[in-house]
Image (cartoon, rainbow, N blue to C red; front, side, top):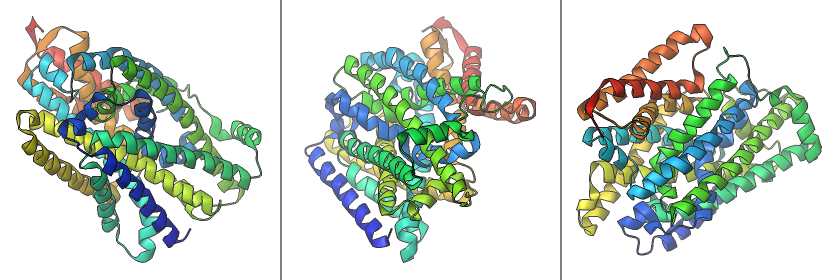
Length: 480
């Protein structure tokens, strides 16, 4: 694919987003930015959430990781079913009943000031790192396809990418994101379906042949029963349950969209439909990964040291034709930007509500504060992406989930303690507990590697449990 074609696709794509932003942000105030005035249709939210949840990590890293872990990633997705059920039946009714804008407001009412600030701070840390990692993938692709051939440095590509996100989100916020994410999800799914079709065509396979070939290959290994393996079914399934709870139900980004629905009933309907579609799409991404490895081996193509690079290498290298390159470029941009733009909005919302108490100011002052915070987090993304570029040396899907195990654990502990006990805690000690539990988790994970392969993705559960126990130790005699 030529640089001119890739650049043209990028220009048209962002022109569409800017048009949507223009119309959806007309007359938008800060309430529209934060809550979309709670008038979003549930089906629109559900469809847009697919793109937000999948991101560039799923689009590139899941197919790439098949070479090392086969289909075992699906164990996590199965665990998501119980996680999303918990969100729909336990967390969402709580958030709607309390009429929250930031979900961490629950922690203030349940425990106090320091618990509230600590919970929000861990979200800001977790989402900033995770979303920057997701955007890093898209920036890499843009660098390879468009900017590197014309001599543009990586740092400039990062700046351009973040500036474009800021441009179409800074006015309308979540009111705009609901619609832009819907468009981006559509592009993502079209790219996935077309790519699978083109790979099969290149291998002279129909749908039945592809299913049979994948089934007969070593990559179809889905369930791991060796308890010493980091991807033992029990570890991954339980991790999947709690990853869904914390990275969706305790995450301002995903919940902010759900809280824009008109009622709790519509929000729950959105969550149920969202899971079943997500299940199917992840099966397709794993299948695509198996096909890519089978194709590479059949054609004696060397597998990159970083498996994240396999899909981009084959798609952009002309192996499957220009259409595959075009759809891949659209897909990765759509996947990465759908998660990054909503994250930027959620981070802005959380910081404005949780730390700046923006609601106490008049509207004119609110708008100024919101713009400054939005710009600040855009610059922070720039810095974190640079750090990933320099220091990361593993598949990003693994890197993000490993980091989530440490940064989301305290949120899991805090919310669990609040929901499942009536105990009050010494609020001023909560920040120490929430910093201590990831440190203890890291020590235990390191020591357990030689015994049973470590906790893997299940370190999130360990971290949350340690936080829960430490909160119990600082409990007060009075009840909440």
